[in-house]
Structure formats: C-alpha cells, structure tokens
Length: 81
Image 1: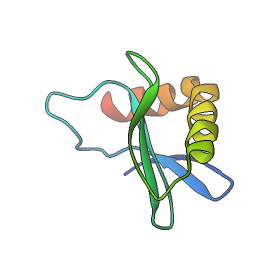
Image 2 (image 1 turned 180 degrees about the horizontal axis):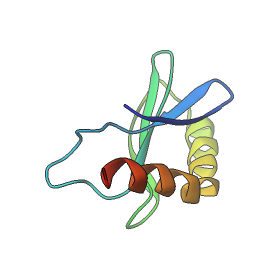
Image 3 (image 1 turned 180 degrees about the vertical axis):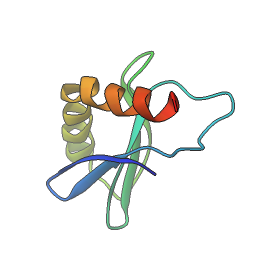
Image 4 (image 1 turned 60 degrees about the horizontal axis):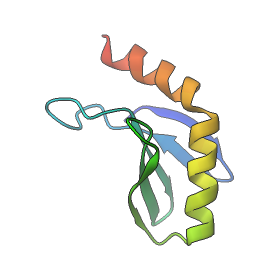
C-alpha cells in the first residue's frame, strides 16, 4: 500500500490491488482508527469514512484535491509497472 504523503498525522495512500477493473483515481486517509476514502475522479467526493467529523472530512478532501497532481503521479507510476 503505497504512501503518498502525511498531513497533520493523517497518511494519504492507496491500495495496490484495489478493484478489478481498476477503480478511478481515489485516495485513502488514515490516522489511528479514523479512516476515509475520497474519490478524486470523475467527481471529487467522500466515498466512505469512519470516526471523522464533517469538518475533518472537508479539510482532508480539500488537502487531497490540492495534492491531486502528486496523487496522480504516484498512482500512474505505481500502476504502470
């Protein structure tokens, strides 16, 4: 599970074997027991979450979108192998 970056103790990552066929661009976020999955394409949205407040989810989605190019680079590099 490749890690992309950390933000305020939250780890942004994706799973190598998730989806067959491969799911659209998305990112998982975890800090302790708090987890979330954000779709970045085709439209940014919260896919699922556990133990996060609505303000945390909004902040984390904003961070993911600001780093979408970085996430895309890691995604493309990983899945093109």
